Length: 221
Image (tube, rainbow, N blue to C red):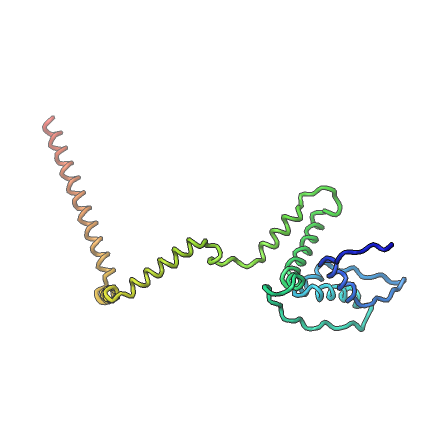
């Protein structure tokens, strides 16, 4: 009695399509297939089907001379309207698969395939690897709605104030004053004079105090 099978999952459909697209490989007992390097999957990270096809071609290129050439990559679908399969193939796998390849390289360096226990944590490595190539989040997404409203409102209030006729006249007068009379230099000279006056007063107070002290000492003698 045949058992009814449920609908295939997305991953099973992808694996089935990948197996169907593989070119026939003639079996030869005298020769062995070359091992596929982990770096092969990183050569074309834009499409998963072509990524796997590229790795297969690299391994069997010396054996088969006539292989179908890769078709040009189609345009990327809209991430908001595409199907789950297209979203995985165009926006998830091209970033995830190179990270998994780097994970396997690092696991080999840490001797994870030789020892039962190591310090290497695959989830932490993959999380850090995926975090590093991501683009920076714009400031508009980091701000809350209240903070964004405050910034927009303060800018708008300042803009409306600067548009006032009297404020514009005042700003023009200040600009002309800075250019004509060198107001910055005059302010520096003013504070220099004030500091000089304060120092002179302190010196005079010090001299008067020293004179009073000298007079008292002479009286005691």
